[in-house]
Image (cartoon, rainbow, N blue to C red; front, side, top):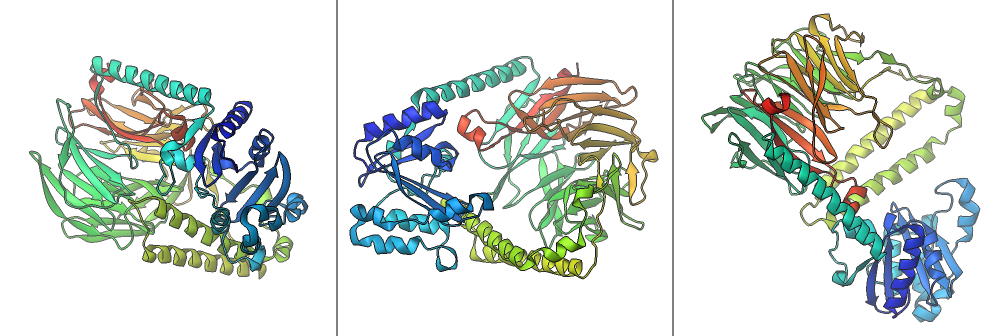
Length: 617
């Protein structure tokens, strides 16, 4: 808004915000302009139209979409006098004519910039004539008009990205009643969660709750009488370790040297040997009387993303983005290497002969026999729908060169977004080498696509592998090796291991016990199971997942019981049982209390220790 009347702009924005049930940030007057930053990043042109109708002042609505589109709408006394759209037809042909007409008339800005309209004209070129990306167009356009803080938005500001924002402390959020209501709701949510947590602690059920503000979910495993926990801050490229044990008053820091990346912890059956997936290696540690002794490292040329250790502590398995490797710890020699590109969790059978592998595909690794990798289909196979089958005639009619060009544009867009994120975050900056590595990887993907296209056009039809009816999120074996536990995107299942087919391509249908959830989340998906732990003193298993509830299933009878609903909107991502079976460790990601953070789908990580004795009753 081109105005020195901050009160008038604020009042107009308040009115529009109430009518549209939208929240906005209003900046101070800077060089004769007042910035208004609507929720949803101001992508709708309606906000500009509505605000312009309330003001005598000039209103200029500027947007950038994915670094591909620069657009504006310019109003004088409530009337649209000029507009610009840099990429007509970007969202479809139905709007092309209207967008073509938005060609921009720099003369509309002559009263503001004078003869500098020539500078604006260069910024309104389209297609190949425009050398700048959309974000740079906006930056230069705003600079010519002396508009400050143009390269930011509501979500960025609310998430704390305020570096370089002029006079940030003078920004106001409106409508005031909506802001107050949102704060009240956040306080109410916080109060309810803290009350529930306090009650659990008073009852002796919740023994420890440690929360961090940054990073992903913590990783934990049982060691000696308690747990070892790792907190990975991927932006700061640092990892901190801690241990907790009875009486569970507070976690104690653990120094294990400099580790910059971590994706998992695992301990053996005696909880005396620990494997840590630490970036380009797996570290092996022995634990005795609280002392940690470094046994050695299993090196990885790529990046370790999952880790498991055998029950006897003699073997370690890890997955990278390319393969699964099983290594004999004493000799540091690989026993088995299996190509695999998408692994989430791995788990040893107690006999040390098999691995259960979950991810986009589920299957087993036979460590000492062939074939080593054996994919199985949980719930049976789901064939490719008919509408997805290839039509050779349609293939010939597609402009593959144009498709490849768009793919390269998307490639550069992703890289630019990463570069922007790096600039906004002081703690994490991608190096030129990392950017080039990403560009090379995308180029390899483009070349692979080109080869596949050539094969298709020559008449070669690609295989369409079947998909499983259920996606296995996590899998584990019972300590005695009798049972296979599977948590899926639809529930929890117990299978008799001796009855599980182990030939490649088999359907995994026969289950002994199952728990399938009927509740659906906000996206219509059922509650999924992400974490499993076995009891030590009785044949039973505890599990949890996206619903934030802990369940217990008895293996002899199949009886199912809910043990607890964790406070807040919690997602249980991992579980570990203590050596004495009396405590249950849980890695949890919870929805935050504030509305802005919830809209960003942020999660608050925590490590919780529960009295399993009291939970079970």
